[in-house]
Image 1 (cartoon, rainbow, N blue to C red):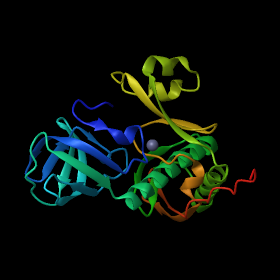
Image 2: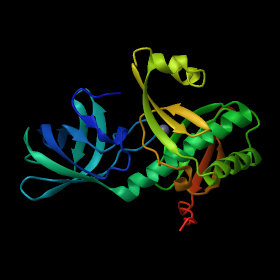
Image 3: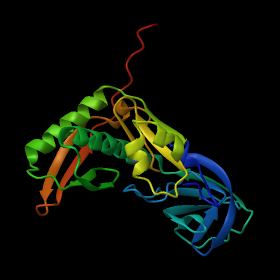
Length: 251
Ligand SMILES: [Zn+2]
């Protein structure tokens, strides 16, 4: 999970929009930085886009981000003259990223609901800024079942459950009866596991970005289902705006 070259700021603080960093390496339209808030595509979540402000006062757009053996690689919309040691300021496109965080968290809730209702059968997922998709191989999957999944999601959204991120050694995770399932699914060579905990509801290990409370997800709507064969059913959901914070009644 840790990167030899680039510190992944998004793993610790998903709400970080701006950061400063130094260039590790650069060639043509590619640059690797000492640290970054730009999420590289992975786990069904698309890469961030945004802007790098350059030492000469100019800016360049970040159009794609990928994890590579050299570090987290930012792909730019043009060739830059950046060189190792140059200082840059990065700013991610927040509207797009915050939508990814809401849809990503919605899929965590959905997978918890599916696990409770039918014992799982999830085969894949994909997040975008305007919808998310989950794939199933569930016998008898139909619109009524999909509606009941979405109803389950909205219940958890309305419960305003905190969503926290913590890092745990694999040995510690294996000792916790509630985490054994998560820990056993991990690759044996992973020493530290990053846990996404929807308080009192669901724990999963992954490297994506999530909102801090299920109310921020907003209510989900079933957009459509697709039947792509006996073992391949798809559920598309869209989200309403986040649920506003309650008015503080103590004042
Ligand atoms: Zn996640």
